[in-house]
Length: 172
Image (cartoon, rainbow, N blue to C red; front, side, top):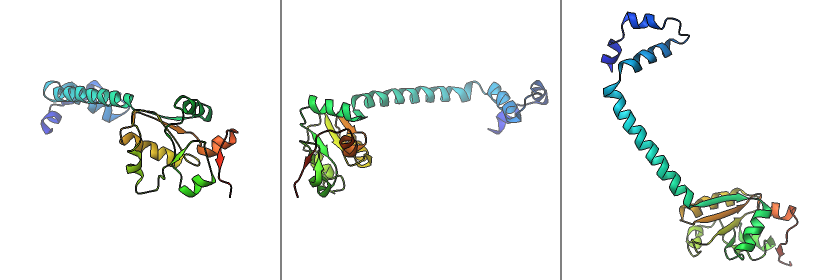
């Protein structure tokens, strides 16, 4: 590194005397004087990074994770026939009211990951909670577990209620 800086001469400093940033001036000279030995590894590194990003994007394209509105959620629920509709709230919250046909898997339970393993990873999964934060976290766990398509209800069951959609309630 020291050798590269020694190549800068007083003449080169006078080439760019009007540069408002002295650091830019030194950078121009530095880049001009370091062509072969230092830039080839960086070009290779750029190719490796671009390849890695491309592969990462390809893998992300296979998993479809989406937060969707109440109407879109209802359409997906009808299309999937409610086979894998998951309420990630606590059992006490689930007992009060829920979307018809929902199965309760408590997100806060230590057994949560084991319970979701019993679901079909190739079918779409629809998840919701009370307002959204738990189902967003659960969606990430579903992704890590290898589920292909996961839809999360934006706003949770509260948004479902505000939209006037049907719910099941326990009569207590």
